[in-house]
Length: 201
Length: 201
DNA sequence: ACTATTCTAGAATATTATTCTAGAATATAA
DNA sequence: TTATATTCTAGAATAATATTCTAGAATAGT
Image (cartoon, rainbow over all chains, first blue to last red; front, side, top):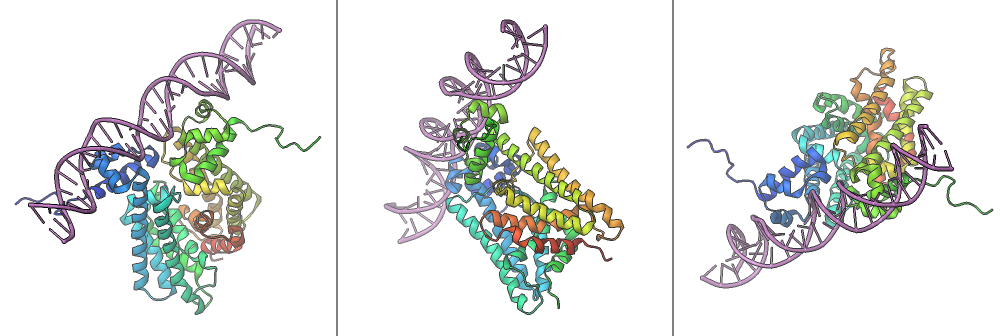
């Protein structure tokens, strides 16, 4: 029996659509992208596409929600594995960097098209995912403020201080303006993040 | 003579269009926004709109380019006023924060819709503006590396370290997720930025 | 096997971005 | 001033394309 090129479980229509949409959206933007073209690439009928995602924006929203959720999931996982403020900070930085390099197309889409105006249902979902992200970070770190391991700061400042530089760098990297991947700067960004939030002790 | 409500130089069609577009884009996103609606709000004909901006995307691009350019201009101005690495870092942080609070709608638009896929002419312009931004920051700081005032880092890391946290915080602020304006955190962000890039001396 | 539900299909429709033609306003030259 | 060119305004006509709709196929549940 020769090698089987097609996977045992062939991709569902929805998955093919998401994949095709990601490609086209990244190439020409959500606006310019045509549903018909995406359906053609995914080999899925218009009817199916609308059945699954409701609209072109629904497709974009799904990509956004999936991507952010996956990123959050990995971050939560990494934070669970470590103990202490410094280890947490470093794990957060590296988790995000790793996710970006494991999912460059999705990362590019997310960073480049935050156009997500809170539309109805999906808008809510998106806000939720977003809120979870910040909450997770704040939750993890607030316990270390008492012990003095962390500098006492307004809760909503930890995430920007720890991950803001990585996000900025990633944007530039994903848009092709720099070629050195963030993983090459991981320790530098981790050091900076820790320096920004560590306590006096 | 009573107070004159209308300015001596009435707003041009192009200006009215930009203003209306900004409002609508922020409310419902570039995708959902209708040119006809924008024209109605701006009291400008379809023909004029297309004469001035070529397309809906052209309108969005113009807002983006105008906004980024203005931000850059102010940043350059502030950097010119100061001497030394620390003063530069602090000026950069505060300039960006100030711009955001002076131009909240424009800032929201820029932060929320980076969807700027490099489209032809305007895409080039946008890339240029963006490149100028990073170049300005790198130029300013590279001279201070020799003297030891600044930590020696890859040039493309200064901007993310100095401004990344502010950008992250601004996004959250402009989307309404936090209410404390960045200006209230200006010193904190400036301290963190300086700590991240200052040299050993 | 029957029924309900989910999914696929693509033609028909509706929406809306863009083009086009003509004319008004404004600048430039003689 | 008059003539001429250019820029700007107008909105109806057109073209592109997102979305709806109806019908039927596949699948799951009983």
